[in-house]
Length: 325
Image 1 (tube, rainbow, N blue to C red):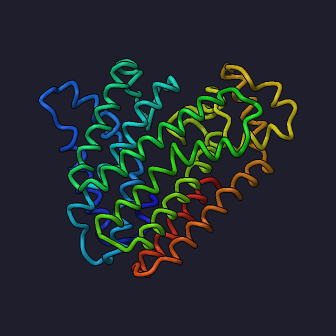
Image 2: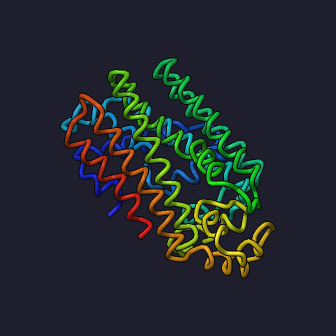
Protein backbone atom coordinates (compact mmCIF):
# COMPACT_ATOMS: atom_id res chain seq x y z
CA UNK A 1 0.00 0.00 0.00
CA UNK A 2 1.09 3.60 -0.63
CA UNK A 3 1.40 6.25 2.04
CA UNK A 4 -1.81 7.78 0.70
CA UNK A 5 -3.66 4.48 1.07
CA UNK A 6 -2.29 4.08 4.58
CA UNK A 7 -3.79 7.43 5.61
CA UNK A 8 -7.28 5.99 5.34
CA UNK A 9 -8.99 9.38 4.88
CA UNK A 10 -12.28 8.83 3.04
CA UNK A 11 -12.38 11.63 0.45
CA UNK A 12 -8.64 11.66 -0.25
CA UNK A 13 -8.50 9.26 -3.20
CA UNK A 14 -11.33 10.99 -5.03
CA UNK A 15 -9.90 14.43 -4.25
CA UNK A 16 -6.48 13.42 -5.58
CA UNK A 17 -8.24 12.35 -8.78
CA UNK A 18 -9.68 15.88 -8.94
CA UNK A 19 -6.14 17.22 -8.51
CA UNK A 20 -5.01 15.06 -11.45
CA UNK A 21 -7.76 16.59 -13.57
CA UNK A 22 -6.66 20.08 -12.48
CA UNK A 23 -3.05 19.28 -13.39
CA UNK A 24 -4.13 18.09 -16.82
CA UNK A 25 -6.16 21.26 -17.33
CA UNK A 26 -3.21 23.41 -16.23
CA UNK A 27 -0.83 22.06 -18.89
CA UNK A 28 -3.41 22.10 -21.69
CA UNK A 29 -2.27 24.10 -24.70
CA UNK A 30 -2.89 24.43 -28.42
CA UNK A 31 0.74 23.41 -28.90
CA UNK A 32 0.74 19.60 -28.94
CA UNK A 33 4.49 19.37 -28.43
CA UNK A 34 4.37 21.61 -25.35
CA UNK A 35 1.58 19.49 -23.89
CA UNK A 36 3.56 16.29 -24.50
CA UNK A 37 6.67 17.67 -22.83
CA UNK A 38 4.88 19.38 -19.92
CA UNK A 39 2.78 16.31 -19.15
CA UNK A 40 5.62 13.79 -19.56
CA UNK A 41 6.37 13.31 -15.85
CA UNK A 42 2.78 14.08 -14.94
CA UNK A 43 1.64 10.93 -16.73
CA UNK A 44 4.46 8.92 -15.13
CA UNK A 45 2.73 9.20 -11.76
CA UNK A 46 4.45 9.88 -8.47
CA UNK A 47 3.63 9.93 -4.78
CA UNK A 48 1.67 13.21 -4.96
CA UNK A 49 2.83 13.82 -1.41
CA UNK A 50 2.69 17.61 -1.65
CA UNK A 51 -0.93 17.84 -2.84
CA UNK A 52 -1.78 15.19 -0.26
CA UNK A 53 -0.40 17.50 2.43
CA UNK A 54 -2.50 20.40 1.12
CA UNK A 55 -5.63 18.27 1.13
CA UNK A 56 -4.90 16.84 4.58
CA UNK A 57 -4.43 20.34 5.98
CA UNK A 58 -7.88 21.07 4.57
CA UNK A 59 -9.38 17.98 6.20
CA UNK A 60 -7.67 18.85 9.47
CA UNK A 61 -9.27 22.29 9.35
CA UNK A 62 -12.75 21.27 8.14
CA UNK A 63 -13.08 17.59 8.97
CA UNK A 64 -12.77 14.65 6.61
CA UNK A 65 -16.47 13.97 6.12
CA UNK A 66 -16.80 16.10 2.98
CA UNK A 67 -14.68 16.39 -0.17
CA UNK A 68 -12.23 19.27 -0.32
CA UNK A 69 -13.55 22.50 -1.77
CA UNK A 70 -12.36 23.87 -5.12
CA UNK A 71 -9.79 26.26 -3.63
CA UNK A 72 -8.01 23.38 -1.87
CA UNK A 73 -7.87 21.40 -5.13
CA UNK A 74 -6.39 24.41 -6.92
CA UNK A 75 -3.83 24.90 -4.15
CA UNK A 76 -2.90 21.23 -4.24
CA UNK A 77 -2.39 21.35 -8.01
CA UNK A 78 -0.24 24.48 -7.74
CA UNK A 79 2.25 22.92 -5.32
CA UNK A 80 2.52 19.76 -7.42
CA UNK A 81 3.27 21.85 -10.52
CA UNK A 82 6.09 23.57 -8.63
CA UNK A 83 7.45 20.17 -7.66
CA UNK A 84 7.24 18.85 -11.22
CA UNK A 85 8.88 21.97 -12.63
CA UNK A 86 11.75 21.59 -10.16
CA UNK A 87 12.22 17.95 -11.21
CA UNK A 88 12.65 18.99 -14.85
CA UNK A 89 15.37 21.41 -13.78
CA UNK A 90 16.97 18.91 -11.37
CA UNK A 91 17.31 16.32 -14.12
CA UNK A 92 19.19 18.79 -16.28
CA UNK A 93 21.53 19.63 -13.40
CA UNK A 94 22.07 15.93 -12.61
CA UNK A 95 22.24 14.88 -16.28
CA UNK A 96 19.70 12.23 -15.29
CA UNK A 97 18.63 9.66 -17.86
CA UNK A 98 15.53 8.39 -16.08
CA UNK A 99 12.90 9.69 -13.69
CA UNK A 100 10.05 7.63 -12.20
CA UNK A 101 11.06 4.70 -14.36
CA UNK A 102 10.76 6.57 -17.67
CA UNK A 103 13.27 8.59 -19.72
CA UNK A 104 13.77 12.05 -18.27
CA UNK A 105 12.66 15.02 -20.35
CA UNK A 106 16.25 16.11 -20.97
CA UNK A 107 17.19 12.59 -22.11
CA UNK A 108 14.18 12.20 -24.40
CA UNK A 109 14.30 15.70 -25.89
CA UNK A 110 17.08 18.07 -24.76
CA UNK A 111 18.29 20.18 -21.85
CA UNK A 112 16.83 23.32 -23.40
CA UNK A 113 13.41 21.72 -23.80
CA UNK A 114 13.52 20.44 -20.21
CA UNK A 115 14.45 23.86 -18.80
CA UNK A 116 11.74 25.67 -20.76
CA UNK A 117 9.14 23.05 -19.89
CA UNK A 118 10.08 23.33 -16.23
CA UNK A 119 9.68 27.11 -16.47
CA UNK A 120 6.28 26.59 -18.08
CA UNK A 121 5.14 24.39 -15.19
CA UNK A 122 6.33 26.97 -12.65
CA UNK A 123 4.43 29.67 -14.54
CA UNK A 124 1.28 27.56 -14.52
CA UNK A 125 1.70 26.95 -10.78
CA UNK A 126 1.96 30.69 -10.23
CA UNK A 127 -1.15 31.26 -12.32
CA UNK A 128 -3.15 28.84 -10.16
CA UNK A 129 -1.80 30.39 -6.96
CA UNK A 130 -2.73 33.86 -8.15
CA UNK A 131 -6.32 32.71 -8.60
CA UNK A 132 -6.40 32.03 -4.84
CA UNK A 133 -5.32 35.55 -3.90
CA UNK A 134 -2.24 37.66 -3.36
CA UNK A 135 -1.23 35.94 -0.11
CA UNK A 136 -1.10 32.48 -1.69
CA UNK A 137 0.64 33.84 -4.80
CA UNK A 138 3.23 35.59 -2.63
CA UNK A 139 3.84 32.46 -0.58
CA UNK A 140 4.37 30.33 -3.68
CA UNK A 141 6.75 32.90 -5.18
CA UNK A 142 8.79 32.95 -1.97
CA UNK A 143 8.80 29.15 -1.93
CA UNK A 144 10.16 28.96 -5.47
CA UNK A 145 12.90 31.33 -4.34
CA UNK A 146 13.69 29.00 -1.42
CA UNK A 147 13.86 26.01 -3.77
CA UNK A 148 16.44 27.88 -5.83
CA UNK A 149 18.41 28.94 -2.75
CA UNK A 150 18.63 25.37 -1.49
CA UNK A 151 19.68 24.05 -4.88
CA UNK A 152 22.33 26.74 -5.34
CA UNK A 153 23.74 26.02 -1.87
CA UNK A 154 23.95 22.35 -2.76
CA UNK A 155 25.76 23.15 -6.00
CA UNK A 156 28.31 25.21 -4.07
CA UNK A 157 29.35 22.04 -2.21
CA UNK A 158 29.59 19.56 -5.07
CA UNK A 159 32.44 17.08 -4.49
CA UNK A 160 33.18 18.76 -1.14
CA UNK A 161 34.39 16.02 1.22
CA UNK A 162 34.38 18.59 4.03
CA UNK A 163 30.74 19.50 3.58
CA UNK A 164 29.13 20.01 6.99
CA UNK A 165 25.84 18.75 8.31
CA UNK A 166 24.84 22.39 8.80
CA UNK A 167 25.28 23.05 5.07
CA UNK A 168 23.34 19.90 4.21
CA UNK A 169 20.41 20.79 6.48
CA UNK A 170 20.25 24.34 5.13
CA UNK A 171 20.16 23.05 1.55
CA UNK A 172 17.35 20.55 2.15
CA UNK A 173 15.36 23.14 4.11
CA UNK A 174 15.28 25.08 0.86
CA UNK A 175 15.07 22.47 -1.85
CA UNK A 176 12.62 20.08 -0.15
CA UNK A 177 11.16 21.21 3.18
CA UNK A 178 10.09 24.67 2.00
CA UNK A 179 7.60 23.31 -0.54
CA UNK A 180 6.14 20.77 1.87
CA UNK A 181 5.76 23.47 4.50
CA UNK A 182 4.01 25.69 1.96
CA UNK A 183 1.81 22.80 0.84
CA UNK A 184 0.44 22.53 4.36
CA UNK A 185 0.25 26.29 4.81
CA UNK A 186 -1.80 26.74 1.63
CA UNK A 187 -4.23 24.10 2.90
CA UNK A 188 -4.66 26.19 6.02
CA UNK A 189 -4.84 29.50 4.16
CA UNK A 190 -7.69 28.49 1.86
CA UNK A 191 -9.63 27.43 4.97
CA UNK A 192 -8.88 30.64 6.86
CA UNK A 193 -7.55 28.96 10.00
CA UNK A 194 -6.08 31.04 12.82
CA UNK A 195 -2.51 32.33 12.56
CA UNK A 196 -1.40 29.96 15.32
CA UNK A 197 -2.89 26.95 13.53
CA UNK A 198 -1.42 28.12 10.23
CA UNK A 199 2.03 28.27 11.78
CA UNK A 200 1.57 24.83 13.34
CA UNK A 201 0.61 23.31 9.97
CA UNK A 202 3.61 25.02 8.38
CA UNK A 203 6.01 23.63 11.00
CA UNK A 204 4.50 20.19 10.50
CA UNK A 205 5.09 20.39 6.75
CA UNK A 206 8.65 21.61 7.30
CA UNK A 207 9.54 18.63 9.47
CA UNK A 208 7.81 16.23 7.07
CA UNK A 209 10.01 17.65 4.32
CA UNK A 210 13.18 17.31 6.37
CA UNK A 211 12.33 13.72 7.28
CA UNK A 212 11.38 12.89 3.69
CA UNK A 213 14.67 14.18 2.24
CA UNK A 214 16.86 12.48 4.81
CA UNK A 215 15.09 9.18 4.18
CA UNK A 216 15.38 9.71 0.41
CA UNK A 217 19.12 10.22 0.83
CA UNK A 218 19.37 7.03 2.88
CA UNK A 219 17.53 5.12 0.16
CA UNK A 220 19.90 6.47 -2.49
CA UNK A 221 22.74 4.49 -0.90
CA UNK A 222 20.78 1.44 0.30
CA UNK A 223 18.34 0.54 -2.50
CA UNK A 224 18.73 -0.75 -6.06
CA UNK A 225 17.96 1.10 -9.28
CA UNK A 226 14.89 -1.08 -9.77
CA UNK A 227 13.54 -0.10 -6.35
CA UNK A 228 14.32 3.60 -6.82
CA UNK A 229 13.29 4.07 -10.44
CA UNK A 230 16.62 5.84 -11.00
CA UNK A 231 20.31 4.85 -10.60
CA UNK A 232 21.30 4.07 -7.02
CA UNK A 233 24.17 6.08 -5.61
CA UNK A 234 23.38 8.83 -8.10
CA UNK A 235 24.16 11.58 -5.58
CA UNK A 236 27.61 10.09 -5.05
CA UNK A 237 28.13 10.04 -8.80
CA UNK A 238 27.11 13.70 -9.09
CA UNK A 239 29.18 14.83 -6.10
CA UNK A 240 26.21 15.61 -3.86
CA UNK A 241 27.34 14.42 -0.45
CA UNK A 242 24.23 13.90 1.67
CA UNK A 243 23.86 13.20 5.38
CA UNK A 244 24.82 9.49 5.24
CA UNK A 245 27.92 10.36 3.20
CA UNK A 246 28.91 13.21 5.52
CA UNK A 247 28.59 10.88 8.51
CA UNK A 248 30.49 8.05 6.81
CA UNK A 249 33.36 10.29 5.67
CA UNK A 250 34.04 11.30 9.26
CA UNK A 251 35.01 7.72 10.16
CA UNK A 252 36.24 6.24 6.87
CA UNK A 253 39.58 7.43 5.43
CA UNK A 254 39.03 4.99 2.55
CA UNK A 255 35.80 6.72 1.58
CA UNK A 256 37.40 10.17 1.84
CA UNK A 257 40.13 9.03 -0.56
CA UNK A 258 37.55 7.86 -3.12
CA UNK A 259 35.41 10.99 -3.04
CA UNK A 260 36.15 14.53 -4.15
CA UNK A 261 35.99 13.79 -7.89
CA UNK A 262 33.66 12.46 -10.56
CA UNK A 263 33.34 8.69 -10.08
CA UNK A 264 32.73 5.94 -12.60
CA UNK A 265 29.98 3.44 -11.79
CA UNK A 266 32.40 0.92 -10.23
CA UNK A 267 33.74 3.52 -7.82
CA UNK A 268 30.19 4.69 -7.08
CA UNK A 269 29.29 1.17 -6.03
CA UNK A 270 32.42 0.90 -3.90
CA UNK A 271 31.67 4.22 -2.20
CA UNK A 272 28.02 3.30 -1.75
CA UNK A 273 28.95 0.15 0.15
CA UNK A 274 31.28 2.15 2.40
CA UNK A 275 28.46 4.57 3.18
CA UNK A 276 25.65 2.06 3.65
CA UNK A 277 26.95 0.56 6.88
CA UNK A 278 24.55 -0.24 9.72
CA UNK A 279 26.03 2.48 11.95
CA UNK A 280 25.68 5.19 9.33
CA UNK A 281 22.18 4.13 8.29
CA UNK A 282 21.08 4.01 11.93
CA UNK A 283 22.52 7.47 12.65
CA UNK A 284 20.85 9.00 9.59
CA UNK A 285 17.57 7.29 10.41
CA UNK A 286 17.77 8.71 13.93
CA UNK A 287 18.09 12.18 12.42
CA UNK A 288 14.96 11.55 10.35
CA UNK A 289 13.11 10.31 13.42
CA UNK A 290 13.91 13.53 15.27
CA UNK A 291 11.83 15.34 12.66
CA UNK A 292 9.00 12.84 13.13
CA UNK A 293 8.87 13.87 16.78
CA UNK A 294 8.94 17.58 15.92
CA UNK A 295 6.23 17.16 13.27
CA UNK A 296 3.97 15.36 15.74
CA UNK A 297 4.62 18.01 18.38
CA UNK A 298 3.69 20.76 15.92
CA UNK A 299 0.31 19.18 15.28
CA UNK A 300 -0.31 18.48 18.96
CA UNK A 301 0.09 22.16 19.73
CA UNK A 302 -2.49 23.31 17.15
CA UNK A 303 -6.01 24.19 18.26
CA UNK A 304 -9.10 23.44 16.24
CA UNK A 305 -7.77 20.58 14.11
CA UNK A 306 -9.80 17.44 13.58
CA UNK A 307 -8.32 14.90 16.05
CA UNK A 308 -8.76 11.93 13.69
CA UNK A 309 -7.01 13.68 10.80
CA UNK A 310 -4.26 14.86 13.13
CA UNK A 311 -3.61 11.25 14.15
CA UNK A 312 -3.56 10.17 10.52
CA UNK A 313 -0.99 12.83 9.70
CA UNK A 314 1.22 11.68 12.55
CA UNK A 315 1.00 8.20 11.05
CA UNK A 316 2.01 9.59 7.66
CA UNK A 317 5.29 11.00 8.92
CA UNK A 318 5.98 7.73 10.79
CA UNK A 319 5.49 5.92 7.49
CA UNK A 320 8.11 8.06 5.80
CA UNK A 321 10.80 6.75 8.15
CA UNK A 322 9.64 3.18 7.71
CA UNK A 323 10.56 3.46 4.01
CA UNK A 324 14.23 3.37 5.02
CA UNK A 325 13.98 0.08 6.90
